[in-house]
Length: 425
Image 1 (tube, rainbow, N blue to C red):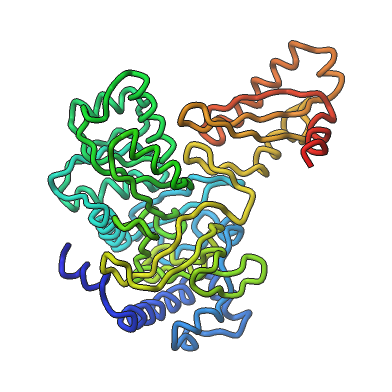
Image 2 (cartoon, rainbow, N blue to C red):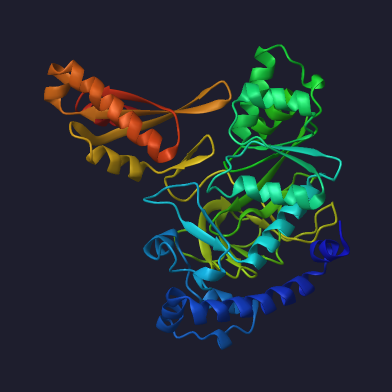
């Protein structure tokens, strides 16, 4: 690791706080001057940038929510002119529409540096061959890892969304040493290997970096045993940067947050009150180096806790516990965020379908499968088989187009969803 990165990851807590304060003051000034949303928000609460004289003063600024971002889409939250934005990405999830985010040249440089640190923490170096199985699209995951691996000097294979069998062919032929994807896809690859009678010993894999969806220690064990690798978690979200907010080290006792770029808080999601170390609540993040799209006290919706003690690895950066749940009703299927409210909106637009539905997520092998049960009007359910088939096909097509997921649709008679809920209580 370079002297610069060692400095930031092992420095004294007071030094970290001083750097955070200086960068926070610059960020708040930029947001107040250039983002109408933040200027109006701070004016409404009688706050000016000069009031931020300590990190404790950050709590005086109200939270930023996903709804705030949606109301100001696509460019209302940008703090620089569009001509200075060199990259646009969007969140992978959908509540009504994805969140559009922008990057300046310096933002891309910072992101690349952060991803270099993520990979370095995982043990990746210039001798590695990194196979990236995230989608290369508007989603931030793939390109973040791509730039970080190239900066380290590793060889990158941009496999994107090849199926598991083709990913395995690439692994064997190109001797990949690092796999980057969702944990469920890694499990799927491990199961395909087993079913095809291919021993993990025939591969060169040694490290796996997995994220984009919650996963447990049980899943980690299955992946490590199935692929013969060291599986490490990483965390990020497009609204803040993309991947690169935090990563596990080999101690696997929490994810180190890169505090020279982000200020984390954990709050009670109901009261908004700050919670002490070790207590679980909603993660709130403030960016302190983002130029194009600064976020101040952004409520991520992710449950975690913080630990400021020094890690046995020597890093003094605060650690967050692994994210296992969210504060909203979002579910994650194959790394894609699925909001029931949007499925409900789709159903209201399809004639014959009722806005009464049930979502069921099953695991078929290693991959999650989403099944949607939908009530249809009584005259269609009992009288028109051909119409039923057409409605089923229409629902399936609309949901798959919206989320990019293969799903199953099951049409049920009116009132059956309510009966099922009552019987489940």
